[in-house]
Image (cartoon, one colour):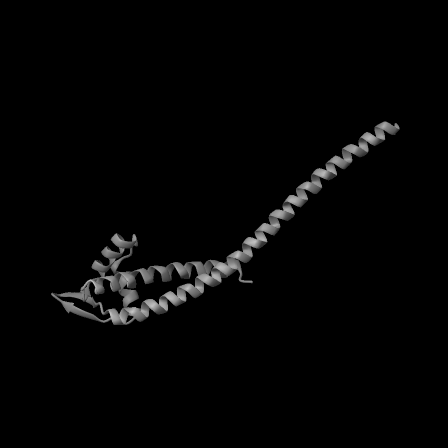
Amino acid sequence: MTSLKECFESGVALIGMKNCMTLFQTAYSMSLEGNRRATAGEIAARAASQFGLKISPSNIGQAFSAMSIATTISRGKAKYVLNPTELEPILRVGKEECTEISDKLEESLSEYQEIAGRVDGLINQLREALRLDGEERKLRAQIRQVRGE
């Protein structure tokens, strides 16, 4: 069984991957629309408007740099080269990794939910046992009264 710490770390990693995938999906969409170059600010604005993802241009630069997305200088501004054939494999691999992590996380979480269900059942059994113990004491006291003890 995966530890809760590992589940948490997987969840955090999955959020980061989802955000990166959103950036690359945004760039891919822009490239399919005919935009062959875009600044990090333009990509950030599109990701915010299209997906609600608020991310700084410098973070976009880090992600694109890590994936070796080419840059060019146009009118004094650095722009990323949006090549759909370059972005497609990144999206495919990212999707596979996200799916793999989310499947593992889902499996781990279902194990913990089963444990939570068993614990709830045991707590209910304990409550019932305590209630019955109280009832038993009352009945024994009544029996002693009837016998005159």
